[in-house]
Amino acid sequence: MTVVVAWSADEYGAAALAHGAAQAGQRREDLVVVNVTRGDALVDKRYAADDEIARVTTALEALGLDVRVVHGVVDDVSGAVVEEIQRSSATLVVVGIRHRSPVGKMLLGSVAQRIILDAPCPVLAVKPDDAADLV
Image (cartoon, rainbow, N blue to C red; front, side, top):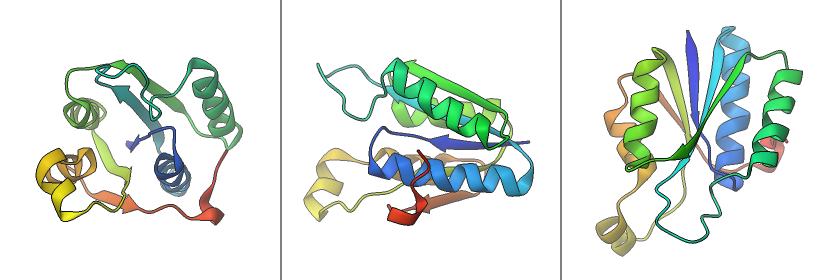
C-alpha cells in the first residue's frame, strides 16, 4: 500500500511532506511524492528543482522509507495527483492547504480542494507547522 503526498516546494508542501512521511512510516507503506506543474508560468516557485528533489529523496530514504517521486509538467495538476493516487492504490493522500479569500476561491479554484473532493481514499489536509519541517 502507498501514501501519496501532493508536494510543493514551499512551506505548505513541507508540512504535507512531513506528515506524509510520518504516516508512511507508521503504516509501513511506500511513499509517493508528487511535484508537478502546468508549466504555464516562467517561474513556478512550487515546482522543485532537480537538486531539491534529490535532497528530499535522500532525506526520506534516510528515514527508512521506500520513495518514488513523480515530477514533471502536466496539463492538470490536481488531475495528475488524483491519477497517481489511483495508479498507486493509495490508502491515504496528504495535501498542504493555504488560506484563500472568498474572491480567490471564486476566481482561482484550488488544487488542494479538487484533490480532497476527487481522491478515492482518505485525505489528510495539513497546515504549516514549524515542528513538522522534515528537510
